Length: 284
Image (cartoon, rainbow, N blue to C red; front, side, top):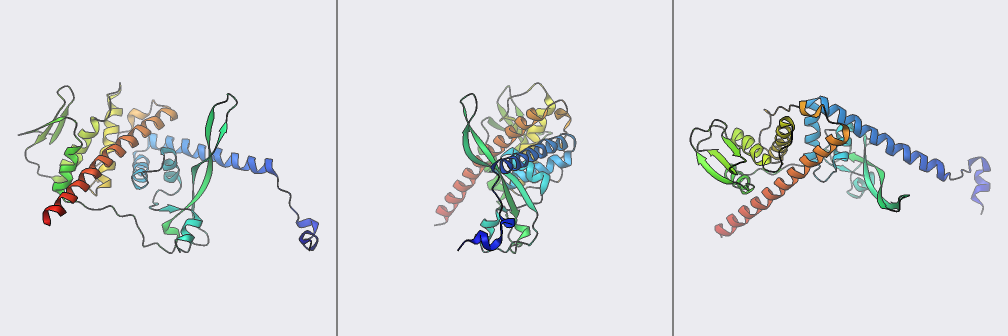
């Protein structure tokens, strides 16, 4: 049976490889422009900057570029999967969902100069809020303040000294490699906010711009506190140090912030898991 004869030649469509390649190229270019536009926004607007940080905490395995794309398209996203993945999870996807386009690794290709590089494809993602599983949310575990403090201090590569009458609650002295901590803290939230920032300062080499150093430490502190359900309502970001940086340099700084956050979070999680394991062993 000749199906084409039944359908008629007017319904026959030839596959146009060049047109398909051009379409995919334009999709990638549009996403790259969206990334650059989002960098411009977070460069000027502290609120947009905070949205980006929230997304990066929610999706720690996403690249900076993909986190920027999520921020630009659906910053309230909490769990992203492809259509097929949601269907495999037996979730019904809304008829007209809001798609979030991100990049995924494709096959490698050889450049004209002979070097091999990865290619990137556009992948359409859907947030859980666009499915029948709207009640599913990624919830971070709460930890006891004492255990959190132990985990924070485990991250210190500096010597620690407890002192009286320390105005800032926590202060890192780079020249002495000493972390000074106030003996008493009237506010646990403030202690964690300040401690995480001072710990973050140890993870970066000082730059020529004090404003960028402060911003990066604030970002890591905000992200780690957000991750461990510590109040971040008082955080204010000063983006002035970014105004003289171009898009590429800002992406470099965002990657630096992400790496420092991941290192601190990983170390804290190892400490918290160890504390939990030891506590259970003691209870036996």
